[in-house]
Every structure is written in structure tokens, then in C-alpha cells.
Image 1: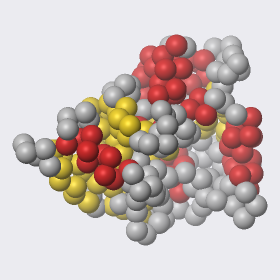
Image 2: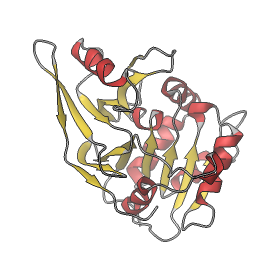
Image 3: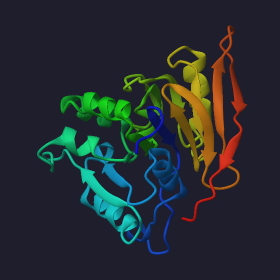
Image 4: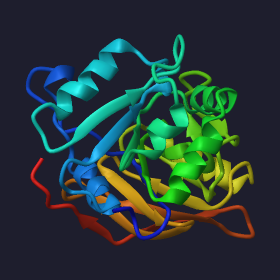
Amino acid sequence: MTADAPTILATSASFEPGAYGLFSHRPGRIHRFAAELSGKREAPRICGLYQATGDPEARIGAFYAAFAGTEFVPSHLQLFPMPNVADIRAHLLSQDVIWVGGGSVANLCAVWRAHGLDEILHEAWQSGVVLAGVSAGSICWHRGGSTDSFGAELRGFTDGLGWLPYSNGVHYDGEAQRRPKMHELIGDGTLSDGYATDDGAGLLYRGTELVEAVADREGPLGYALNRAADGSVTETPLPTRVLRYDA
């Protein structure tokens, strides 16, 4: 079973942290929500893409460790130093959820385009595979956002895949530069109007329409960001539903 409409879950939420570091993480409520959106609660197939950090073995290993012994059936697609599957398109289209990790959104989009993944992922999205991710894995589906891809001082990124015709701000409450930089970039016209998420929050799009903001705990919110004629930016908190899955 596939999602009712092309579905993207763009978030600042991720795994439930464990007590013993990276390899003790467990699936977050956001992953179980993604599985529900796919219509596959039993043995949902989830594929991890970690090109935003260069496909590091540690992150890929932690991805498998997180899902070990759960209802999920994990796999991954790596592109460094070469693809690990012979037929990328067939592998991605066979998934229920594709989960994209954080890192450099500029590098992520460039590598995807070099391998034709932009076209394959678009086909997967249109066919009902739920596309989801955190940080760079959230910004990538939009026109752009603020990023540390080019250094510690945030800059505007305007070369996202653009399937969602908005800007996207991540870690909105978690990093001091994020909120003012999004206001600056939207206010001066570098970025279009858009949406942002606090750490722990996510945005659900059906097609290109935002239909809901969710969070993995009480507190985190989603926001709508809109530029006025005078260049000021209005920030409107969105009603944000707390996910209640066991994590």
C-alpha cells in the first residue's frame, strides 16, 4: 500500500537518542509516522541516504543498529565511493520510506544530480514512496533555506530540488543563527516565503500543500514565514500535533 498522495515529511526531528551514544539510538516517533503515512505499518521498508555527510560508515551502521529488532526493514543507498546497489531506481522505488540524513544540503543536491537521483527520487515521490528526512534532508525538497554548507556562518542556499515551492528553515530554536538568518534571507528576497521547524518538529506535505505540522514531544513548533511589502517578515506559529507513538 502506498501513500494517498505524493508525500514529503520534512523535519528537524530524528532518532530517539540512546544512553550509550550513536549506536544505541532507536527509531523516533517521526519514523513511525512516516511508516504510517506510507500505509505500511507492518515490516515497512526504509532506506537511508547519507550523502549529505559523504556516506560515512559510522552513520550507516548506526542507521541499521537503530532499526535492529524493530518492525522496520532497513536498507541504505550509498554513492561514495560508488553505488552499493546495481539498480538504484529499482531499489528506491521498492521502498515504503526514504530517510535522508543531515549534513551539507549543497553537497547532497549536487551529488544527487550527478547520479540522476533527483529524477529517480521524484519518480519515487510521485509513485507513493514517502520521502522524509532531517535538516539537509528537509531543506533539499524545497527551493532552499539557510545552511552551514559553506562554513560556520549561515548562508542562503537557493539550489534545492524545488519540488516544494517554499523556503525551509531547520533547527529553528536549536541554533542561534537560524531564526534571524531566515528572516534576513526572506526579507531581502534571497529566499521565498516558507516554513520552519524547531528541533523535534516536522512538516507534512501532500503534493505541494502543507497539511500538518507535527512534533515528537510537547514544545517544538512549526512556523509559517511570510515577507511583507516593506521587507519585514511575519512569523506565525502553526498548530502542531504531538505524535504519540511508542519510540
